[in-house]
Amino acid sequence: MTIVLAATGLLSACSPDSPADAPVAVQESAAKTPEEAMVAVQAAIGEQNLGDAAAKAKTAQAQFPANPRIHLLAAEVEGRLGNAGNSAAAFRRALDSGLEEPIMALGAPAFDPVRGSETFRQLQAEMAPARLTTTPRAEPSTAERVRAGDVEITTDATGDYVRAGDIVLDTRP
Figure 1 (tube, rainbow, N blue to C red):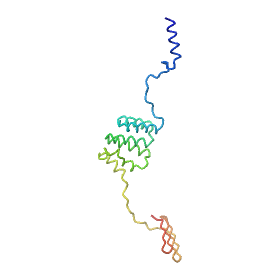
Figure 2: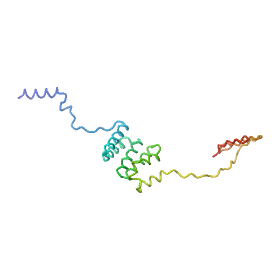
Figure 3: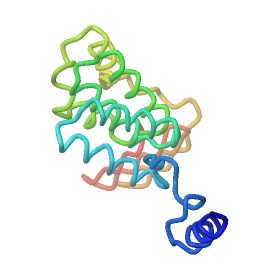
Figure 4: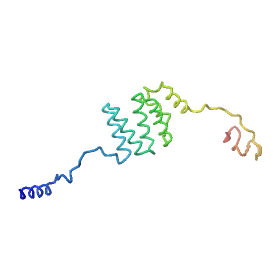
């Protein structure tokens, strides 16, 4: 009996799959880079498993909070799911993280299911470009003017005005 126990111990110690080295449970490891996290979310979207994609996106947001592309991807997944509030919140985090070209991102088809919701309309209103207004040109208070024949040069705090014959260069607003 003692020999059997000793032999079993020796065999298990020499085995490459010894119980001490074997993992207890295989868990999905966290992504090492934002790109890996986004690939995992995209893969879940490709498999039409939006619940899994949303869970992976939330994990990625927590892991890489300064990455605007991850927040945008999370917003898109939530938009596809029809969760307007979550989608808008993730989009705002993307903005806060420095999202480039937010107006273009807001037009993505992933937001179509939530585009008509009140929460999402508020986000769109905030993102609308400001209306351009024309303001009258201020008259320069202190200006340097030079005029000789057909040439006139005026320089002040608002910019320069140069006219030579019928050619005009005006850098003032």
